[in-house]
Image 1 (cartoon, rainbow, N blue to C red):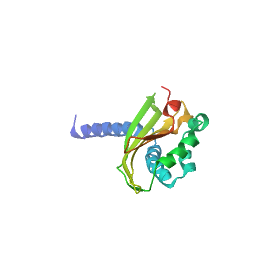
Image 2 (tube, rainbow, N blue to C red; image 1 turned 90 degrees about the horizontal axis):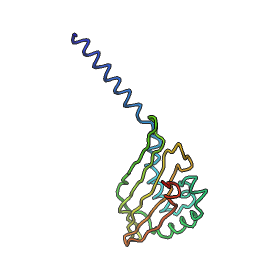
Image 3 (cartoon, rainbow, N blue to C red; image 1 turned 90 degrees about the vertical axis):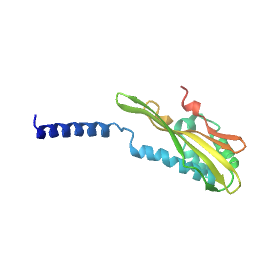
Image 4 (cartoon, rainbow, N blue to C red; image 1 turned 30 degrees about the vertical axis):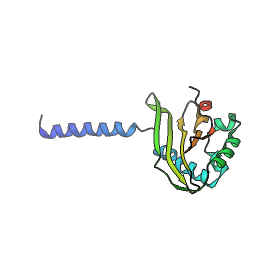
Length: 166
């Protein structure tokens, strides 16, 4: 086999590998960016006390079956004090389920540490965001937000286990 033929075979193999790799990402970049943008939204809506916009981030299942949502949001608005001065970059724990080569579930659990406010408070926030769930589309969105202050006191909005009973 001559050098030209070897190069053609190598190029062909590389093209196949590139095609396979580019086809494996079935969760769109828009979905991933939306999940990551949600961290900024959660912080902004808590800081501005915008209950309607914070409520809109929650999934349909929480809106339909979690009767304490409005009460939890109001409690969180009182719990979270001050304007945000700084915070660590969010950390993202991702979970995925693939069936027959396609994503059937993709979730992100962002964690934001060292949220310092001008009220002298420091918070840590973790929440659960489902980006894709083909079996239960009503679970797409946030299911729970947990806010913890520097004294270990916590405030919860929503219910992760209601949406994810497994």
